[in-house]
Length: 357
Image (cartoon, rainbow, N blue to C red; front, side, top):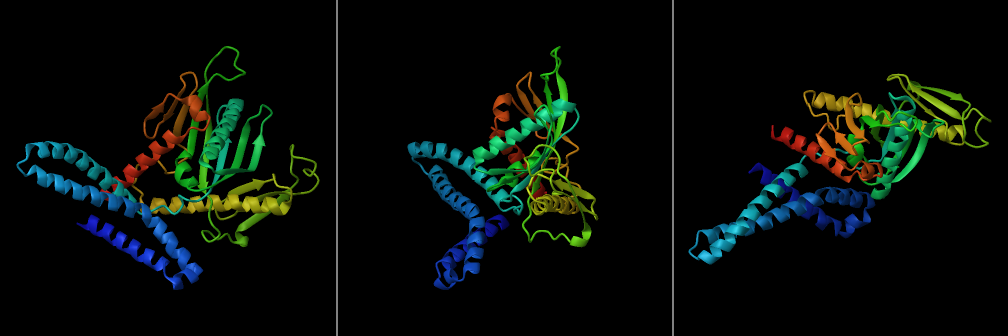
């Protein structure tokens, strides 16, 4: 069967690469060695699953042969194992089908995280700050680093907008489904009558491109400098260090004033612009490839309400996959594992369904 032939070809290539990596000529060629090591790493999980599949398959065949025999005691033992092994074969087959799907090259990239207050005034900006803390705590649990790029704080301690870079292994792959409108339902601290208010915050997660991923032409840029405002130390307000960059073809505008020099602010603004353009290009390509795809998960459509945080009921609901968790305090403290895992599993199921169709 084609499925098995593909897996056998992957394993054969894996064994071939392992042999090459032990060759002195390859070891001395750093570029070739790194290229082969990266290819091997990308195949390792698939090969391990296939080898496990073959072990279970062989054992299953042995037990099925016993069931054809005459020993009732052995047949009883074999029957129990056969049921478990068939279930394991089904699980491994689905896993292998997923592992053979084309990988998204963005999954291992770092991200630019943008959180913006939406409808709801002060309560929205306060929740924007809550979400930023939630993602920061989740990042800490994952061993990732979070570096602030830009922030527009409010007098009440919230954020009109906060932009940060989250770096580490597999960041985009885990947080890619956070893009969208996050709705909060709770009683604001300023509400004297205890009424529940509904506010919204927009989150954007963009893979940070490598230098080779995207080219930004200087002639496409309009760069303005201005005097940075707000709190930030004595260096602020003394020079025109803040930078605003407009990408004329798309109309994207990026501002940065958190760094100490105009050069640093320009570099940061270019990073954000690069991430936005990279996401824009990826989304346009995805539309061309799969215009009729109906799954909202992972589409990056930020006009859609994706999740509701209901504080009176201690409930978090992700509307895309009908997931409801009664563990709001834990989620706000950065315990996003179950949410992230459920979204990834649903996304993988859609990929498999698309592949099968």
